[in-house]
Length: 131
Image 1 (cartoon, rainbow, N blue to C red):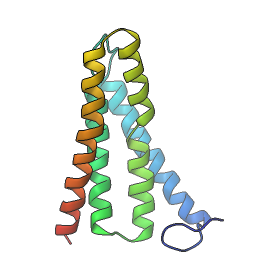
Image 2: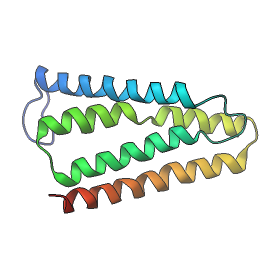
Image 3: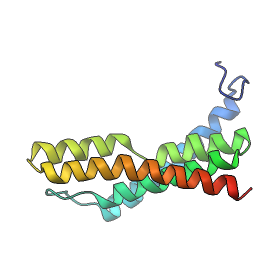
């Protein structure tokens, strides 16, 4: 077992919280992604961007509220970790670049990184104020 940032050992039950949250988050992403995302054809996958931005906001709220460890493991590490997807963002960006959609790729990179970070910061501030 390895110590986490709360200073305690990670137990099987705590790992289970991450697994349950992660499966739920990944399942939600898959449903949204398969329902609303088609072939890009040179366009930005707005649903993936919205999922990532939303996940960053929720994680910001969770960390801003300084929730208890188990709730963080379930919702923060698990659900938000499973919901958001850097790998899909990377594949989408690489596809845009491969297909010579440089402008769209730059916009997608900018929006994904800057808007997601801003969303996290707004969520974090909101979480601190909602205590």
